[in-house]
Length: 311
Length: 289
Image (cartoon, rainbow over all chains, first blue to last red; front, top):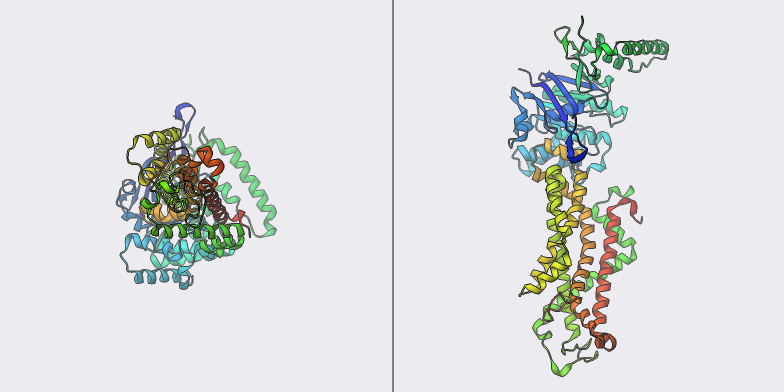
């Protein structure tokens, strides 16, 4: 049984407009997404801004309401639990937020921030709690003495690691990482990402990694899903996607990865032009009248793509 | 943002010390409040408000430091007790209306949507009521009229501004990720509101409460001046000033109403000064340095 199964997840936001707040056509932020995550694996969600990757992550953890479809965690549906009073599922699913500045309460000390999940789920004495927080801080590479500091006394990378310490405090099975490093500079990005991998091995974590940075996704993920306008356009293992992209949108996305070697500049330019031409020519075949992707079709055991109907 | 490393209270202190007017004001407020509350413990209110026909309208002397009024009552004693009553009312009204305003504003802003709509329509309803008319009608109909009933009727019409202020700030705060992080950490809504969001609103709460305190002193005095405040048996700053409605008192017996008027002015200005300093301390862009 997979750790997390997302079944035809749809998140629509109603738009009220005009006289008397009539309901207009809703915004379909996520429109029928399905994927599974196995224990200890990393699943990457990639897509441009507004493609619904963040909304998907937030819907799984219950921060956005699910319109239809379902999310199964270890076979249990989260849809009903999220609304209810039994919040115990939160022990096993935690989240790392994108912005390390707004995700830590500026009026709280580090010990209060990191211990918040512990206080909700574990019965610990003050001493035990302090020791647990110090251990967590050590694990994320921060000085255990800093428990009484405030968030503004830390740099962006350190803050993000405080956020990670909070997320792993309960030893969850799944962490939803919503662009965990996009607010950090490049040197710190690598540091935080490698650290996330170390923790993954240590705790046998599964990650749902949401990012628009293909380099990070390639470095981190076992499986990748490419999203466009709330739908998956392609899904597969990292080698499927990077080695054998089938959908024109994926091809175009991959061709946008910058090449470090200046000798390849001409080649890269031509490749991009060719892909762009193909994209324009094939656009009507690959997307329906509303510009949305078709349902996924299996190409191999692991590889799915939203290929157009042929014939 | 060089002050970021200082804790909140240090910033406030620094700001007040920098602003000499605010420092002077703070000392004045503390001195007046301490003096008034301590001395009034020694004074006997029923003794002071007793009419004494042998000492009508005496100018200031060594026996009556600020003379007597047309009932032969010691003005100085009335001033002390009156200031205490006025301050007590102002503090009670401010904190009670603050409490209600914070509770409703926080709930309304944190949950948003339907809840927000519901509470804001209630606020709108209270806003359109003619406050002064209702207070006056209340004063004239309620037989036993004292500090508590006055406080409650004032509170009933003064919490809306605070509720709106807190709501608008809470609406901003709830969009921040730390609220969502608390949610995913398993905290309940109540806990998030009180433990996470409220501390982030503390600066505007303190600032607006301070400024409201000054306004509420004025409000009580104003109503008493119009004759809808306290009876003469409960002196307040407003009742002393209201004696000046008598032209004779206004013209030739300045000692009855001038001290109370000056005290109202000094208190309101001082509290306002401190409030402005607090406001600057809460907003980094306005700080003096």
